[in-house]
Length: 281
Image 1 (tube, rainbow, N blue to C red):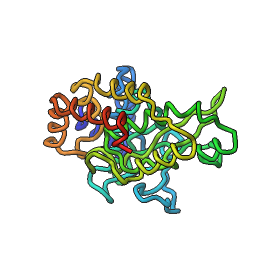
Image 2 (cartoon, helix red, strand yellow):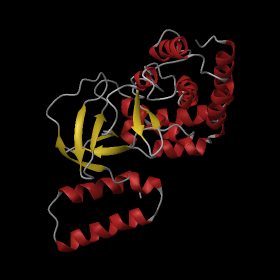
Image 3 (cartoon, helix red, strand yellow):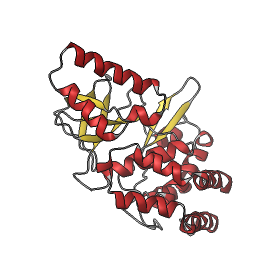
């Protein structure tokens, strides 16, 4: 099933349909879901049914919408930077692959047919930021420092310059809390290493100064080793999971080529060394 066929499916949804068309459409949707692959599911984006008229105070998100799954999403398009949607999708998928929790995300189809990146709006979260919860004793720093170290290593790989303290979502669990890392709009294709002087490094210094050293080699090495184990075919699958309009074929091919080259290993080794000797701080 290609994105072209998926586009035809979406067009059929929007158009006038008789009984036989509706029946065939339902059968096609059912077959896609029965296929069981994540790729098949992402070919059918969520449809936006309502757009919040109140703007969102965000430097990168374009607003909040409600989709036909009944959930609301903070959506990001390429109006502020041409690679925002690809960066969000690619980094979120890669983060999931190496065991870093991120909020659920989808491809959302606006009412005009354009496809945008949507990060699900998480309700029921505490009013405080994670660091405020640590300061008041609600959350133990020991319970989150390994995740924070993992995210720092990951952010350095995807050159995310904007990992400040508020780019986490705290979610209550049955026992304790979970932290979700989000916001990769200023990562991946937008900047280059090292991240000296950017929010990611400034925040890491602040965490260390206020809560103690957390960038232990074991945690950061584990994340970097997982990234190193990702194959170029896996990277192709991630890229193919979003609409082709989000990135050019030349750019997609260049990413896959770089991924399979010695340059990626050198990049990872540089991050390892920079964390060990403190030069990345």
